[in-house]
Length: 306
Image 1 (tube, rainbow, N blue to C red):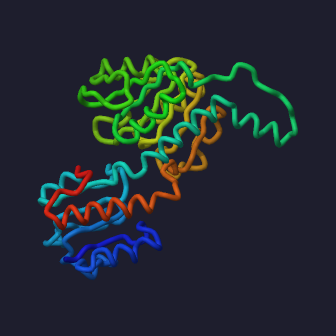
Image 2 (tube, helix red, strand yellow):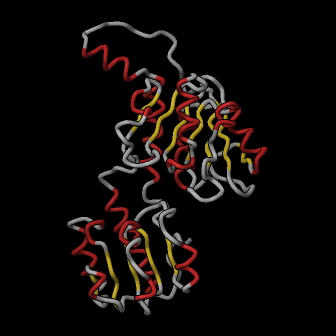
Image 3 (cartoon, rainbow, N blue to C red):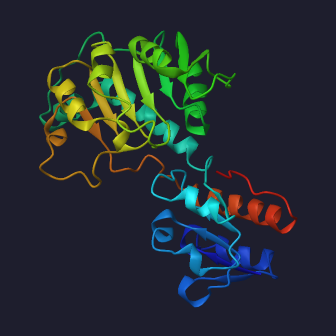
């Protein structure tokens, strides 16, 4: 069996272990030299340049990222090829990043860094707390659940979730669906967190109407995709102080151009699509790869199929 693998995503020490663990698999590192591979363990950016029609034996694609909006999943599945993402791999680090952005605003981090630079002792009274607040999370998958779980430790009033279908989800107090449900969770949020995939239903889901619904002291956090927010409407809302602030790990486009007005606004905190950064990321990708290869070889379906 031949399997293409992006070995750099496995980690320097893990890749040799993978070769030892699966001696009957021929791991291929250059796709254009093996059109007879049966599986691909691949980055989305690499898959974009692949014509799956050129791989007649291909039965399974394992993406090494959680997002898949830049992959033609429907076409791949129409060719009877299984495709899955790395759904749970990045959830812990991204959840922690959400709190870094909230606390940036609540504890006035930028102000105190500037005070340190000028050697100024100037405390701010009555800084906001996460405690006793209403948390609204759009997207109740692994990232949303990891955020919700950690919110409980802060003693929040309740955690509201928005998803496509009503169901009980761990760590969420209430789940809402549909347009009326979306309006409810937006309107009641002290902190509105975006953790849902980008698709035709979520494109510009947060728009001018959304900002009109939000509380003036609300903070918006986006660790999903930039296009889920109407960015021009966001800039307008921030300039008019319709919300307290926005913590963005994603923007439209990426990298964000130097001329974009978001860079200059005081009530924005931007990170360069780096919320998933972790020293454990490659180990987790390696473990997922091992589990899914073992499942595939034993005739079972791999985890995280789309």
